Image (tube, rainbow over all chains, first blue to last red; front, side, top):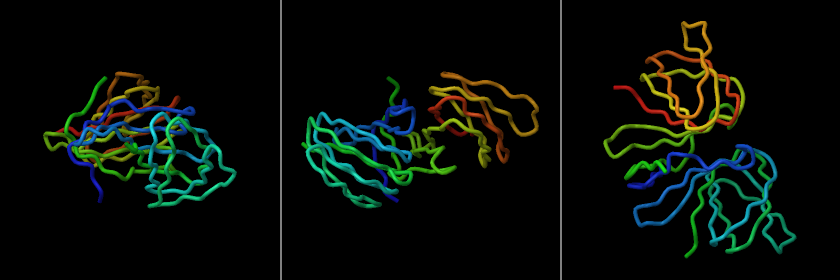
Length: 104
Length: 104
């Protein structure tokens, strides 16, 4: 079982899209901001400030990055990168557990 | 902003009721197991092993403990206790962010 050790975890959830997407923010032991979240089935668009890495922990979704015409499928254990100051469309097919970290 | 400091956070979410209830498990700096979760609107029944304290961080729900005929309403900042080896019915009225800890 993967465990993030010695992190500072924010009590209050981040709630988006009427709760269909929620996440928990934490700062890891090296001072990096990260989040763990859940997306219910549906279609969403997310913007980025910093460039990020999205890892699908479980579930299935299709993603189209801004500037691309291609939908790509991601499932458990796969990741995709999103540039800074960009956005992406995502079609969540089954309840998706994700891990988001930021690219320095 | 309330933050749990120096906790060990499990990467993988706990997913119940087709994702309508999800939670994140962690062990706090004193070695106590806790969780932070989200309940989407709906009606659920939960069983307990250890006695627990449920704090509603945001949202609104009605709760009926096993053996009671009374539904009680809980909103942001309120808590209810559930005995060990028991269960409760909960009607989640609006997306509910909760914090669960255990009674020793």
